[in-house]
Length: 186
Image (cartoon, rainbow, N blue to C red; front, side):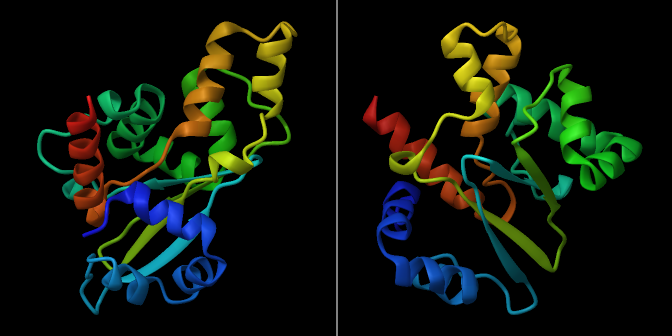
């Protein structure tokens, strides 16, 4: 199976592969060594400088021993809350930006669109992060750099939100490979 960074670099640099991933995700994932059962459909979403997509995993599909808050403190806290509080989960899926802002006690920029999807046993979501080579700073990051009065915790959240890549659930093997590559590289 290819390492996730290798796959992302191919997706970012090969428009045909990227289109194939969006149009026929299971076929492309199978070519990359990630075979899913026929009963499972896959939807692919792409992040951009103004759009962040997140996936709420099924609680029982989170690998044993994985602490979501250790993977990402902000996103992990929000995911844990959604997995344990049905009212918050409903709010998160219906109005993610408001739910996240409230749960993290921050104000998110108006220009940022946030979408949250829920994995089910028959539908999995995969998020392709924005290509860092194409990245633009969002409003919150620009304000933090310019000293525009943004609270420090808001600036930290902006960085956390913009870097969060959900790879829990059936793609946990990919996350494990990334973790192994990272550990080997240290």
